[in-house]
Image (cartoon, rainbow, N blue to C red; front, side, top):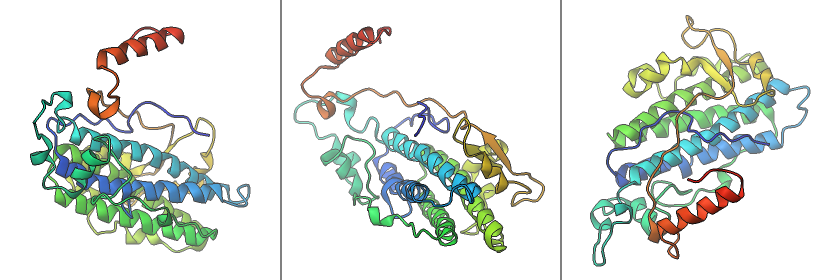
Length: 305
């Protein structure tokens, strides 16, 4: 089962201005071949189908625990896309005859998709609006092969994130990318260590792939100072403690020690954004929705909104 916390994994300020072009680039990180939907579902299905969990517990714990963190990454990418689109739709202040989307979405392929086929927010598509595919999931049942694929997947995801970074100067998008660079590096390193335990092969010597270190990316600096690059968060009150059998010892920088942190990162609050009545529930005016919500809160024994 899963315990959900209503916070983002990292504090991420709401963008000051809408940027549909940046949103389309970031959406690749959701529904692309190397996006968060692929990493999440690959690790999730590997954990579902994992055999001999009692004998291979550290490896099962690693895959299952990272899968849980990926749920938070999907949420983070979703928040980023919503933030980058916020305001592009006029936030409900559109008069008859207006065409506010003509200029904001004109230059972006997926941008038109947000308005024509979606809720003006994140969708399970790539940057071109093409849907995510279930056959991106890889699960062979062979532990070494699955771990090797996961290492490759994290390196591929890092490559795509670097290319996305090169396609936008939007500070909100780049800040989110900086966090995912750092955490993706942890996951690639963790899978390399797991393979080293099983085979003796030191794949960590290949990292980072591509050969651009996080310290060279300005948006990673904050997270490196916080030690995020050497921390493996344990997303369970009691389970997955066995990851410490893999995630230990010196980091890629031999002067730093790897650390398992009990519990998720502190993170930051979810975005609070005004609604777009005609895009969500045309039958109700916003004030009517607040009234309905208050009645539900009261019936549940809570306080009014």
